[in-house]
Image (tube, rainbow, N blue to C red; front, side):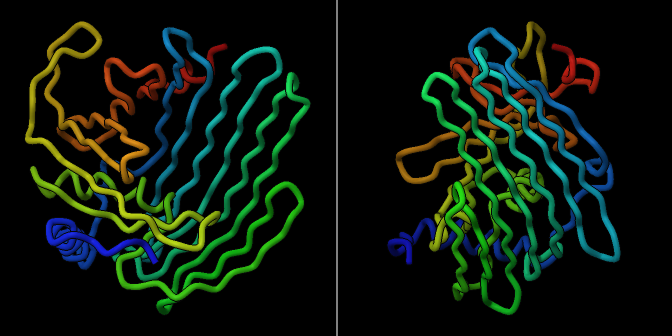
Length: 241
């Protein structure tokens, strides 16, 4: 189990649990969206996310492709389904990392589900299979499901929230704090833009900045000084070499 949450973190968790009871993703956020991936000033790949609603649940597909040059690539694909309140979740994920210089190829595969207070995980890391069944408490979400539900938190207003995130490559969930700003007007890509700034933190080891437009669509991942960023784009722009 993760370390005990603080009083402030328990309050942030409680706000998320309350939101999940009636969580709905705006119809305007459904459909297919494309993004470009940048390292420094160089475009190195693209991301595609498709989100749909079917029979009262949500379904998603995502693909992330990065090419760092000299044959070094990283490709991730995932898909899944989940109920709006997160009580039912299923995902399938696969990642391939190739590094010719180090003469390494890593293949990660996983399926995971949460239902009835249990997480069932099947994973394979470079040919080493593992099976796990883990009891989980209410509100634990698989990592890809968190990315789909994040706009629900943005729409709840300014404040501090906490997700309990489970990766299919871990046996324990991790607390992720989410700090949502009020609507701000800042300069982005050379023009004033109304947006919400969202700061997420997983312990002290990883902090990420998200920028959302007023309709809660994702505009950018990564702060203005970050070397790595993901930026909303057209399909044509995303697929352009």
